[in-house]
Length: 296
Image (cartoon, rainbow, N blue to C red):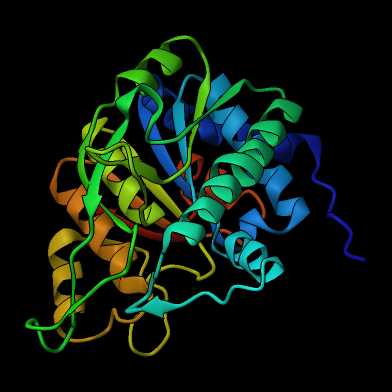
């Protein structure tokens, strides 16, 4: 069992004082947080995350949470005897799988997060893309990475058509913390499963958020030698794509983040959700706990 080191009162006061300029700078600003990885499945990290979100709200920052739920969906499909199938990192979502995705994301996972935030003293409201017409979507056209003439049918996987943030703004004005499941709806009222990183990035752009924070199971963006790159510009990220430094599972995450940075979100933080309170440490201190991508 690990013991938490005790901090002298003077040191605690010093830490709080160091946060003050950041609190002042970000007061009244919106931060979109993509919640995923270990931070979502480890009970201690779940509690830390909820506390961090509530603290941000209490000091006058407006957090908006977008969550994933891959492991929970996989477990639910397993209980039904279904095996998850993926093409180029995207879950193939037939009608039955979509039903499971909806009740896991908009039911189980979302309500767990809402409950944790309430437990930490905040007020949260769960939303899907259907609520307030938040996320309109269409069927994703997926072409082969190597041969663009080949197109895959991945079922009810969605591509965002538009985001109407009015319901999110209304909740923020009433001191609520929106918790959003990445489910969109189409013209025929059909549901679509959308990548949570993509939803968070697009939402940050539409809300003109000050920051987009992506919680991951990695320290951040690493160079080819495995060293953490703490501060990057959008142009430098383009270079890392070109030379293959960024590849695999980080590609969709970073490309969405890059789009947000280029579209006016001041900073995108890719941080290690396995570190307790990493979000607060990244946002309210000078210490870098991940990679910050600046828009300029």
